[in-house]
Image (spheres, rainbow, N blue to C red):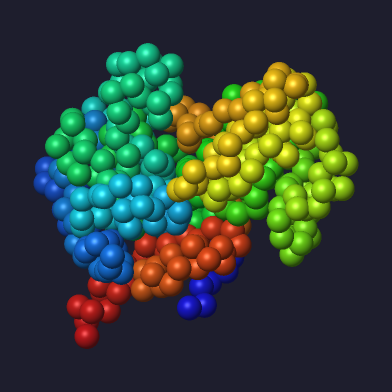
Length: 391
């Protein structure tokens, strides 16, 4: 597979105006009945991704119907579809980094227009009533947030299906405005990788007074570097790979430390305020704790599927350190990161893949062979269907 590298050019405003005029004529019909979406998903346990059709619900009063243009690929997609985080109901269409256009809106929807570029991240619903939801922390909903895929939505009765598909219908409270200044494909990973790394930096009030460490330089790590630099921090990247030293510097890292080099690790001892750990494989944290200042914090955002080596309590006690985790972000904070990225010109570094390249892309993700994020061009699913119909 040779995926296309780079970022697609956003459509001209004249094209957007034409889309709005066209879809306005169909909005009433779309709102009254559900429709079929073309998709790629896991159909049988242990199998490969396959093409399939899924049904999207009718547009309710508070719903927004979105034609999907791009969907980022996340390691969570693989873990979920392959049952590595517990068995999931099949068939399953994954994908929670969705960017597209509004094609129909419910009668009670406010703040969105037909033709507007929008996004959907990792959540499509939550109870809206618990303490977490009231604080804008829907990702920590005490009654169970509804994931964009592989979740039962108690409000609609659906088993949610994600963004490796041509369309999706979502409650307006979980739809995000994607600034037109951002490339739509390169902006898609901001809805997971971006918010996952932005949220802990934001929560810990990182600014230009701070020294931030980033462990790992994959899809999450490269976003952490970009975001921390935009906040004004001095950034140190930890990596086990000498080949990633120059790549980290190209992303804006001020310092790069080979974590297997004892002398290099000792040289940064007690210099960092915050560490964002993005590694999703088991690794020893105790040496990283030594690089933190008094009252420093190490935030775990990578999620290993196996047990981690034990943390020595003395590593924390010796400098009053905090070891914490962070899980994506709420809807308001996700909108905040999109606006922040538009202001600072930040997007993900991506490779574009088509629907028939997804299985190979997943294998490359598992092997760490992507710089730094794959994004599915969903139009390839439409084009394949059109080609099949005309054959």
